[in-house]
Amino acid sequence: MFYVSDIYNTPPEEYETPLQKQTYQILEKLRIPFERVKTDEAIGMEDCIAINRKLDMEMVKTLFLCNRQKTAFYLFITTGGKPFCSRAFSNALGVSRVSFAPEKLMETMLGTKIGAATIFSAILDKQNEVQIVLDKEVVNSEWYGCSDGITTSYMKIKTEYITDTFLKSVKHIPAIIEV
Image 1 (tube, rainbow, N blue to C red):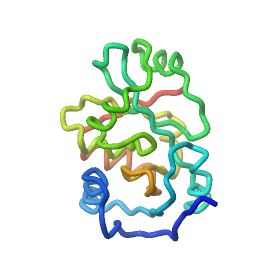
Image 2 (cartoon, helix red, strand yellow):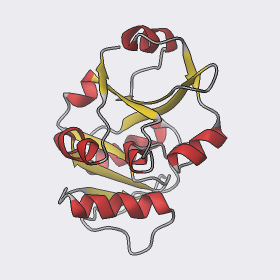
Image 3 (cartoon, helix red, strand yellow):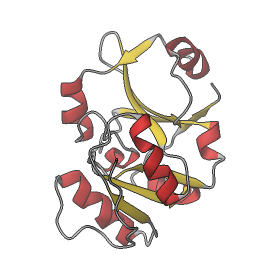
Image 4 (cartoon, rainbow, N blue to C red):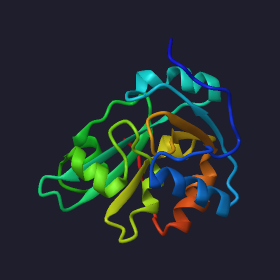
């Protein structure tokens, strides 16, 4: 049985990564309320079913993508149940075909490992090297569920706080697409 803790409205007592710590610091600074749970390691969307149930929302799917030359990078956030289609993404954004970025780049650019990709990596992207791309369905959802930067801690935040407050504070203007 997949472990999901009780719901907390406070940051963890100890942080596992610098990104996780910075995530809670910026949420506090911006006065963004959240709910969070500790879990067993969740890597795929099927692991998120129990998390979704506990937090009463749907976890987003966050994909780190790049072009063939590895010169253009995208953090694509879509709904958890939607399959990824590179052609549809590329056409909607008007860019050349993309694929999944290498794991090593994910660690260095986003500060996370596979399974923990999160919009909060925008905190680390001071040069705007990664384009944030939001699926319109995510933007239209009341709640935004995501990792806090590790694979054993997930949170629920009002989507408007992500789009209207957080992204503006880290100077990232997202592209919004329909796929």
